[in-house]
Image 1 (cartoon, one colour):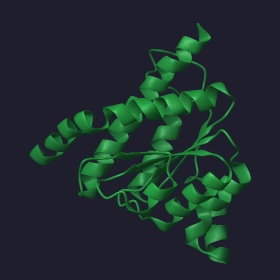
Image 2 (cartoon, one colour):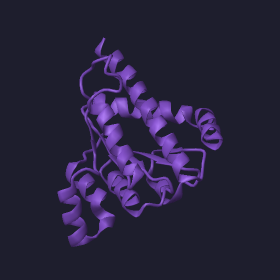
Image 3 (cartoon, one colour):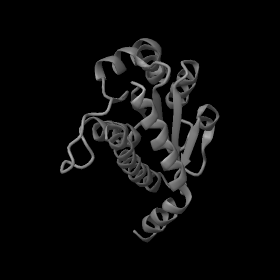
Length: 186
């Protein structure tokens, strides 16, 4: 637990500026009619679903607001199994970006190593469609770095601590987006 607490303390110092920048990028997209898409594998797939839900529902149920356009590319089991079976697992997110993404959207690509092939390919597909890419990684940014407009690197090499940072960052970003969107509606 001490190591996790130490990483959490480092997170604020090393990533708060990037979290604010990510929130601004997302809010600008939403204000212009765009949406936020999330992707990742394993725990990062769960984080994708969690964060998309926070945007669509609300982060704090005591502060109701309009839903924000977001989706997790990790949730359509029929598509994922069909595409994987017919074409391979590596293209599952890129294909959805091709079909559902449009210029001005934002992709939040989550990979603790920065090298998840299907996440890297999703980022590359997003670049081709003029979709802003925010990468969430660990200390080693991996190949994902090359296709990102912004990379937020959790200050750890340990997967569980990186994932703890990612969900904390996701909540901070969502809260900041809610504030930025509320200012627009005033």
